[in-house]
Image 1: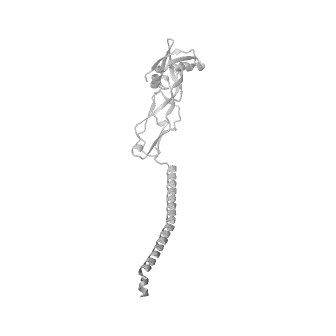
Image 2: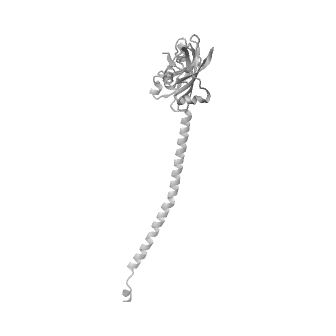
Image 3: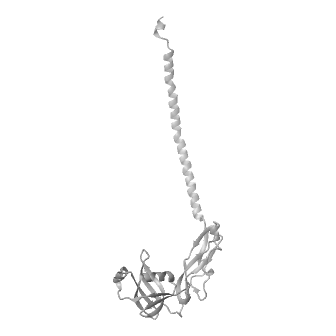
Length: 248
């Protein structure tokens, strides 16, 4: 990895007053390390951000302060809810002594199980801890997932390929990535229960509708049965002979 360079200046403002620096686009920071007296520094945001993007927390940075070059790693970055850096700690390293660092994992390729729609890719770890000389720390570790073809296929820490000179400190048996079922047994059981409950509710609703329709039909029949009663009365009146004919 290319070593980044960053020019900074000593910082005299400390405590709550550092918020004034931030308003001016200046990021407060510290440099500390073994056999190194902690030094308060400041650096423009516009200079820090591209270096941080390239180096991350494993890339070696040469900090220039008071005509002195200090090799450091970014140890921690405090940020606000917008992910804007508020404070940075740089760790001064000895280039001849190994250091511990968290290295991000980069997943490459597409799992066969996902392509064939056999299962889902589950990423368990996003980084691992390693130990190496500052100049040999990898920027990232690639994890090829193309060989994962079946449910429960997995890649563990022990399967990872790391550069020579890098020692992995994370538990070797820890799972990095695996293939899970498309639908878990618990989710499938729950779905079946919900489907059964819905079917039972629909059947019950159908029975209630059927029972509710019977009185309506009976009422309709009853109303229909009452209608013909008026017709015989009309027919009787029409068939009755006139009163004059009776007198004759």
